[in-house]
Image (tube, rainbow, N blue to C red):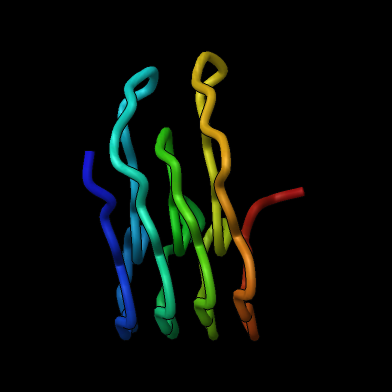
Length: 104
């Protein structure tokens, strides 16, 4: 099992879907994913998608900047009811001037 890295990228001006989607398969032991030091800005995912969508996988989200993104949620983390994903982190991130469109 090798770790996967999304490191030091500019991700901007994407539309009609998540800017970054990280997903695995429920109940399996896949690689750990590290999302580190990225600048994610000026994206418009719309009301159906998230800027960073994480599902069924162990992820560390560290030292990223999310700026001026419009989406359902800026970061959405989903783990199935039967899956145990431990030791994940979401630390030292900057979220600035984003618009979440999840209805209340």
